[in-house]
Image (cartoon, rainbow, N blue to C red; front, top):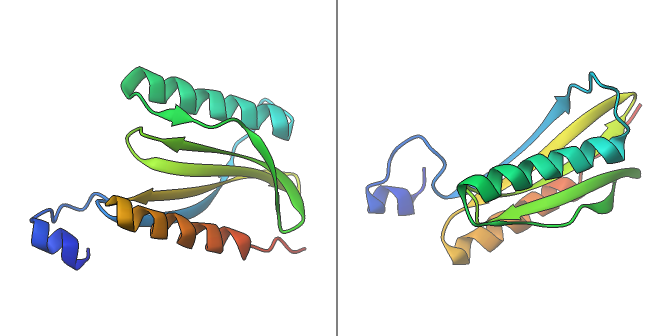
Length: 125
């Protein structure tokens, strides 16, 4: 919790201003290929966003993370703005989530911080 939250009186535990960066394994029980799984994840995000909010979900784009090919999409204007990157390493598929929320002048800094974290990731044997 930062000074802006204290000054505003918003001291709940929910993320009000800041960023989150997390990596988690996606259970791929149906054994979908990485691209198809990524398309499905993006479609789910779009369906959830359009049902509840009037936000936008970007097109799926190909990215390179630590030399690995992955897929990425971003969501804006829904409950929270975020970017998801999906990569495969050693027969496992990982979701890398970058969440950022706050005032317009702060949110760009949070997004840039999570982009910098993403650019430093290394997958090693």
